[in-house]
Length: 80
Image (tube, rainbow, N blue to C red; front, side, top):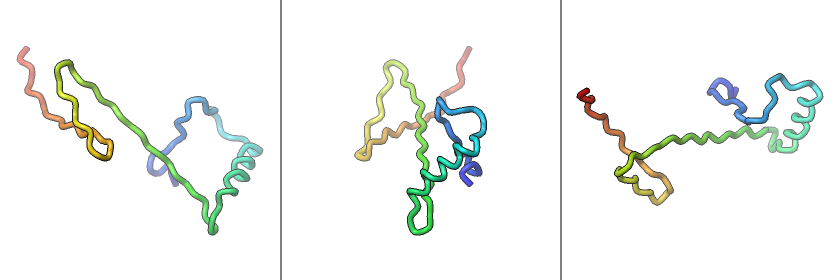
């Protein structure tokens, strides 16, 4: 069950209520076209990113596979 791992429909324009029986039958019929060897595929993609850079800070170098690894260093407490 995908909900057990926290997956959900994040589509912005989706309806907020439950799907009716007729709509559910349409989904089932469309999904059945993808059945192979008695199995239906279920896949998902998770994309999350959040970053900021203060002025004068170095930009992380890009790796060959397209990632930018950022080192997090705990700052010393402010002396206010």
